[in-house]
Every structure is written in structure tokens, then in C-alpha cells.
Amino acid sequence: MRFYQCSSSSLRNNKVERKSLETIKECFYTLILKHARGFYLKRKVVVLSMREFILYSRLGRTDARWRSLHDAGRLDIVYECTIASLFLSHAIRKDVVFNAILNGPPSPPLHLKIDGLTLHDVRTDVDTWTGILKKVLSGKPHPGISVYMASFENLVKAKAEAKKAQIYVLEEGGKDVYDVEIGENPVFVLGDHVGLPKKAEAFALRYGEKISLGKEPYLAATCITVLNYILDRMKPR
Image 1: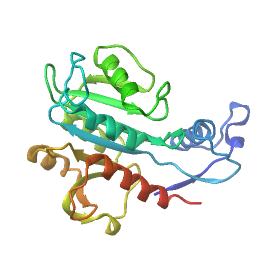
Image 2: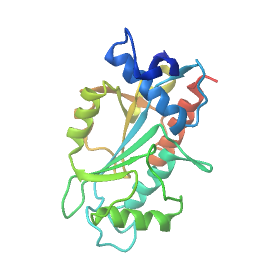
Image 3: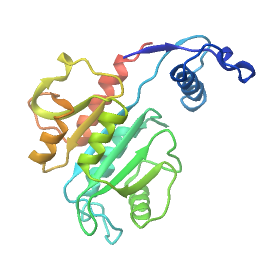
């Protein structure tokens, strides 16, 4: 991971001298982090890194005509992965984005994006998220959540090319996660209870590699919890 140093003096009087556009962006982003992520920055070195998760949901419904998450093409798995990705005890992870590609009827594929930086008006219970998912899948807005038509392949390609992110596909037969140097802005790809389709896996591997949390087939939400734990421990103290 890269480290950047930036102070507010760089932006004093709206005059930035001898700074490249990239440096200006880094300074601006660091100042955002000061407020949005609760860091106290005073000429400190800051890790500028986001992490993302992409869940491939084979059957997740793409409308709001359902009664329960389980019966909506296993949207309960989407809910569980959302909680594992974005929530700490009494806090939301501001440096995490959770994505789900829903491939169920009636209008697949649908990209559900939940951004921890702007997400609010939420709790972690299933009733709250049943209501939220019904709302956004019916076309109504919710802070931090967007829904639009996009395929798994388009999303993975966009992440790899636009963000220069490293793609990591979770699979029991992959390289042990402790033997992998996790890159900046990692994107982790997971399947649902059925697993990632072979074609989708092969496409994702054009841009990344397989990694493993061990030989046991863990639940998708459990994999996300373990990855968050590992990445949290990597943060400088």
C-alpha cells in the first residue's frame, strides 16, 4: 500500500504551488478523510485505501414483489454480506463499498451498490434491511445505496481498469491469503450459496488471482468478516 503525506497548508488561500493534479487530489481526499472517517490529521502519514466486495447472486430478485429476503432469490445472503462488509459495533465502515450483482427475475442483471461513506438511516436488523431492499428495488432512493443495470463482467472490468484495483477471487483452492500481498484498493469477489459460475470466475481471473481462506467452504458473509479482520490488522497503528 502507498503512503501519502499531506497537510492543510497545501491548500491555504486556495493557492497550491508546484503541485501536480494528482497531488492536489490526494490532498483533497485526505482532508475529506479527516472529517468523514474521524481521523485527526496533523502532518501525519495516512493510508489512502478503499476495499470493495462483489457478491455474485445467481437468483437475487430484481424487483420488490416478494415477502421475505429468503424467498426473494436468497436476498438474505445479500443482507448478511452487507452487514459483514459495512458494519462495526456502533459504526459503519467508511472505507468499504459492497456490491451485489443480482441475476434473478424479472430484469437481470442489476447492480446493487452500498457505499459506507454515504450510507446512513440504517440499522443492522433484518426487518430494517428488508424494508430498505424493497424500497431501492422498487426504484426509490436511500442514502448511500444505488441500483442500476450492469453485468458482473462490466463491474469487474470497470473496477480493474478505472481504479487499477487488484481483483481477488475467493476460492478454497486459491493461494493462501497469508501468502498474498494484498494490493491497494482491493476488490474481493465471492459467490453466493451456489458459488461463482465458472464463466464469471474465469472472467474475473483475467484481472486478478484466486485466494483462499482455507480448505473449508465458509459462508460468503463469514469470508467477508475474516477478510475485514485481516485487513484491519494490517492498518498502521
